[in-house]
Image (cartoon, rainbow, N blue to C red; front, side, top):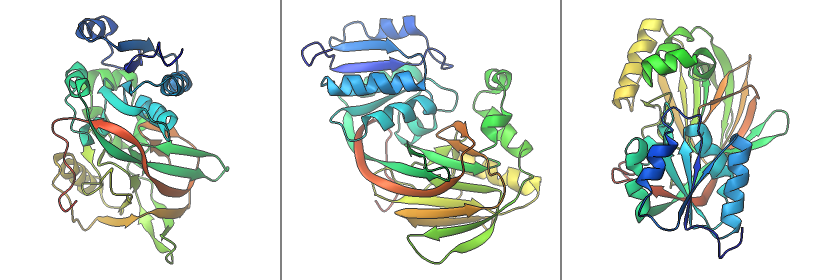
Length: 303
């Protein structure tokens, strides 16, 4: 692929995403010159294609799938001149909620003449020395166990609600932790949830970090202390409704970098994908790339 042959907009379609319909997508692209579709075979293939299109001079590379697809494409585009677009075709589509995008193929309209804003990414360091970039949320505890607890049948039957049902069923484990915020002495406690957020939503519409801002160069850390399943269930319902900023079970920190020590095998969901590696450090890579936002995009109050 050369600069002359590169499309203006490249859509990287995960054909396994729940809302993927290649025929319907092709039909919607009729009359859009300079657009191209490539089907991905895996997350690594999506990243490879994104790098190739960016190097060839493509203006907008669109992750068409769920939050995992978005993460792979965003990581590949970081530091390039290509902007990231999102076509939310997965089950949860949490990152697209923060971007103010409509569901499914209706998000194409926001990509015709996109409004681009700078997007921070989370640079995650693991205990084994490996690293990763995230666009949305690193979600640990019962919320992280959701990815392991949900079956394909539950996703098909319940959609985004399956995440909430699985979270309640996985809320028994408690994790002692030590959290270092921007080099300060450790804050210690016990949690059933530890979430490190760049954006606001996770778990199929739970607004875990209502004050998180993808443009501010900061991350939000949210911990949820142990409580009965009934109280945690009520909190989850409030989070899904977007009504929680202050709550006696919730503690929040804002930082540029955090270091974390956790006792026990804390299950993590990284942008919706289960990961067994232990997180030790997360820092913000401010303005790592540009992202196309939708008509309902709003920064949190005060930004």
